[in-house]
Length: 274
Image (cartoon, rainbow, N blue to C red; front, side):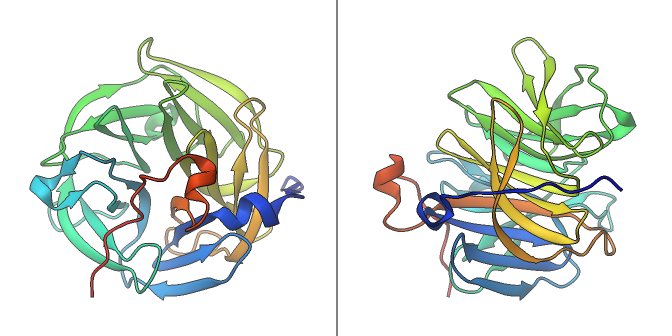
């Protein structure tokens, strides 16, 4: 086992307190604010391996989820041999609740939106694979394989500023990019730590993520998009270390009061249900 080297952010009290997050680890959800407390919830037999936020003006599953809603996909096969897709109500406050809105025929270790289109990704066959999913049925409609070798793919997140997808290869403990226009992937750099699973989400131009590291902890932090280094901002909980699945999904939004600072005042923080 390689030694874990996690850089702890000196400015966690400034940047960290501006972010609320939801992390899944097997059948458990952790809801918290970086620099603050963490609430723990059980989601039973569901395992949300990928989560993302529906962009403003976009609707999926025939209105089953709309702008600002969090959606997630299960890594397990259902009775139809497909993967259940859920809307996660009360993702960032209150008690999170899963509402099934469909199923997908694609293995998606992570979900992300790009220019109004929904994408999933995986590392099947030892290579990075990304696919577009239909917004209504979640069926795969296009597949892209740049021939980039990976051991495993967890988190994927699209940056509109860079017009690139960022993804993490847990075999190399590295951050990488994918360019859909040229169907090409590139190595950015090593993370500086070792981990098993991970999730990614952009807030503005900053790439946030969660990892389950080899030290047995679930960490939330930021990725340097120029070097690939992961900086831990908060230790969330002990990591299952694989458990039955060891899957990690991750979403994050600016905390109240931070949106104006980050220029994201119009971002919706998720659907509230009573």
